[in-house]
Length: 224
Image (cartoon, rainbow, N blue to C red; front, side, top):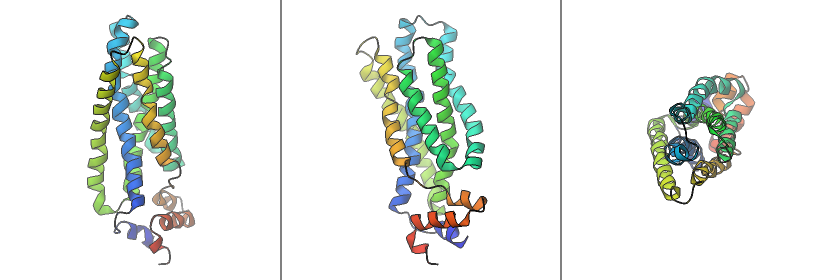
């Protein structure tokens, strides 16, 4: 479609910036929740008398989940659409972070951290793909650097939050893990009514729906 080619050449608008924040804050969230576990383990090790294998499991469960989510998230999004999985992965992230605060032993927390990792892993390829399919071509490189820089921002903020909570009591680790649900709500709100990618519609032969998304993003292109 000529209109989609025109999108590659247009200037960045407020709607582009919203898409950028919706993608970037998902990566921020990934950095936040993957990193805060390191501080939570300081308390959990003593409170639950964790063995070395349990410590290893808690430290790697989310990473293993992220690997699985990354392997399957992209193909699933190609089949069912970016928008649907874009919301599901953050919703899964939200509930896993929230429920992690209610874990009763190492096994339950390992399982919850694995499911959290699934959301993290699915969001990596999806956020970058969704962003690239909307942004003008000239802006994609800088945008990719920016959103993955937010991962480090998430890790930094989680370290600050974790250290502030560290000495608030024996259950501080619960609040650390639950705190990841707070920015997840913001990301869900930003993504709540974003459209499906027009390029995905085109690959499915759904040209009318693709045109509607192009009109939403760049109304000046609707008539041409």
